[in-house]
Length: 129
Image 1: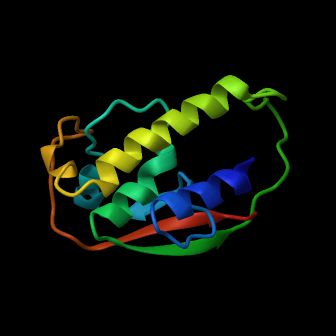
Image 2: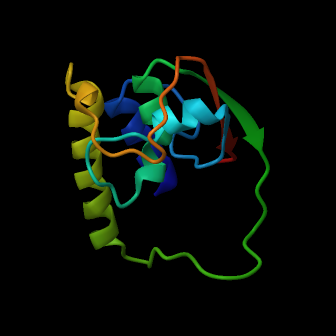
Protein backbone atom coordinates (compact mmCIF):
# COMPACT_ATOMS: atom_id res chain seq x y z
CA UNK A 1 0.00 0.00 0.00
CA UNK A 2 2.85 2.39 0.80
CA UNK A 3 4.52 1.90 -2.57
CA UNK A 4 1.18 2.44 -4.33
CA UNK A 5 0.63 5.73 -2.49
CA UNK A 6 4.16 6.83 -3.39
CA UNK A 7 3.53 6.08 -7.08
CA UNK A 8 0.22 7.96 -6.98
CA UNK A 9 1.76 11.02 -5.30
CA UNK A 10 4.64 11.07 -7.78
CA UNK A 11 2.23 10.83 -10.73
CA UNK A 12 -0.29 13.42 -9.53
CA UNK A 13 2.30 15.99 -8.44
CA UNK A 14 4.93 15.33 -11.16
CA UNK A 15 7.62 14.22 -8.75
CA UNK A 16 10.23 11.47 -8.83
CA UNK A 17 10.92 10.57 -5.20
CA UNK A 18 11.64 7.13 -3.79
CA UNK A 19 9.53 7.91 -0.71
CA UNK A 20 7.28 10.87 -1.35
CA UNK A 21 5.30 10.51 1.85
CA UNK A 22 8.13 10.26 4.36
CA UNK A 23 7.58 12.38 7.44
CA UNK A 24 11.28 12.66 8.34
CA UNK A 25 12.47 16.16 7.49
CA UNK A 26 15.62 18.19 7.98
CA UNK A 27 15.49 21.89 7.07
CA UNK A 28 15.68 25.43 8.43
CA UNK A 29 12.85 26.54 10.71
CA UNK A 30 11.58 29.17 8.27
CA UNK A 31 11.50 26.60 5.47
CA UNK A 32 9.36 24.11 7.41
CA UNK A 33 7.10 26.96 8.57
CA UNK A 34 6.56 27.88 4.91
CA UNK A 35 6.00 24.25 3.88
CA UNK A 36 3.46 23.68 6.67
CA UNK A 37 1.23 26.53 5.50
CA UNK A 38 -1.74 25.12 3.64
CA UNK A 39 -5.19 26.17 2.48
CA UNK A 40 -7.31 23.13 3.34
CA UNK A 41 -7.63 21.03 6.47
CA UNK A 42 -5.88 17.69 6.00
CA UNK A 43 -6.18 14.69 8.26
CA UNK A 44 -2.94 13.22 6.89
CA UNK A 45 -0.93 16.33 5.97
CA UNK A 46 2.32 14.48 6.72
CA UNK A 47 1.64 12.71 3.42
CA UNK A 48 2.01 16.03 1.58
CA UNK A 49 5.11 17.57 3.19
CA UNK A 50 7.32 16.78 0.18
CA UNK A 51 4.52 17.78 -2.20
CA UNK A 52 4.21 21.17 -0.50
CA UNK A 53 7.99 21.68 -0.53
CA UNK A 54 8.16 20.77 -4.22
CA UNK A 55 5.24 23.09 -5.08
CA UNK A 56 6.98 25.97 -3.30
CA UNK A 57 10.20 25.46 -5.24
CA UNK A 58 12.42 23.91 -2.56
CA UNK A 59 15.01 21.37 -3.60
CA UNK A 60 14.48 17.94 -2.07
CA UNK A 61 17.30 15.53 -1.28
CA UNK A 62 16.40 12.06 -0.13
CA UNK A 63 18.71 10.31 2.32
CA UNK A 64 18.59 6.55 2.74
CA UNK A 65 17.24 5.54 6.15
CA UNK A 66 17.32 2.01 7.52
CA UNK A 67 14.15 0.81 9.23
CA UNK A 68 13.77 -2.26 11.37
CA UNK A 69 10.73 -4.40 12.07
CA UNK A 70 8.24 -2.95 14.55
CA UNK A 71 9.02 -4.12 18.10
CA UNK A 72 5.96 -2.74 19.89
CA UNK A 73 2.61 -1.19 19.14
CA UNK A 74 0.46 -1.67 16.09
CA UNK A 75 -0.41 0.21 12.94
CA UNK A 76 -3.60 2.28 13.00
CA UNK A 77 -4.37 0.93 9.50
CA UNK A 78 -6.37 -2.31 9.58
CA UNK A 79 -6.25 -5.22 7.11
CA UNK A 80 -8.97 -3.82 4.83
CA UNK A 81 -8.50 -0.03 5.04
CA UNK A 82 -11.24 1.06 2.60
CA UNK A 83 -12.20 4.07 4.71
CA UNK A 84 -8.56 5.09 5.14
CA UNK A 85 -7.84 4.75 1.40
CA UNK A 86 -10.96 6.78 0.56
CA UNK A 87 -9.84 9.52 2.96
CA UNK A 88 -6.35 9.64 1.49
CA UNK A 89 -7.74 9.81 -2.07
CA UNK A 90 -9.97 12.73 -1.04
CA UNK A 91 -6.95 14.48 0.45
CA UNK A 92 -4.93 13.90 -2.74
CA UNK A 93 -7.73 15.60 -4.67
CA UNK A 94 -7.66 18.60 -2.28
CA UNK A 95 -3.87 18.78 -2.48
CA UNK A 96 -4.01 18.61 -6.28
CA UNK A 97 -6.21 21.71 -6.24
CA UNK A 98 -3.99 23.46 -3.71
CA UNK A 99 -0.61 22.62 -5.22
CA UNK A 100 -1.34 22.29 -8.96
CA UNK A 101 -3.97 24.94 -9.72
CA UNK A 102 -2.06 28.12 -10.66
CA UNK A 103 -2.51 30.93 -8.16
CA UNK A 104 -4.54 28.87 -5.70
CA UNK A 105 -1.82 28.28 -3.11
CA UNK A 106 -1.15 32.02 -2.91
CA UNK A 107 -4.43 32.24 -1.02
CA UNK A 108 -2.97 30.29 1.92
CA UNK A 109 -5.04 30.41 5.04
CA UNK A 110 -3.81 27.86 7.60
CA UNK A 111 -0.35 28.11 9.10
CA UNK A 112 1.63 26.01 11.53
CA UNK A 113 3.59 28.97 12.91
CA UNK A 114 2.75 32.05 10.86
CA UNK A 115 6.37 32.46 9.77
CA UNK A 116 7.35 32.77 6.16
CA UNK A 117 10.69 32.54 4.51
CA UNK A 118 12.69 32.57 1.36
CA UNK A 119 13.32 29.59 -0.84
CA UNK A 120 16.13 27.29 0.09
CA UNK A 121 17.03 23.66 0.51
CA UNK A 122 14.81 21.04 2.08
CA UNK A 123 15.87 17.50 2.85
CA UNK A 124 13.56 14.56 3.31
CA UNK A 125 14.97 11.34 4.69
CA UNK A 126 13.69 8.49 2.53
CA UNK A 127 12.36 5.33 4.08
CA UNK A 128 13.60 2.04 2.74
CA UNK A 129 10.95 0.45 0.52
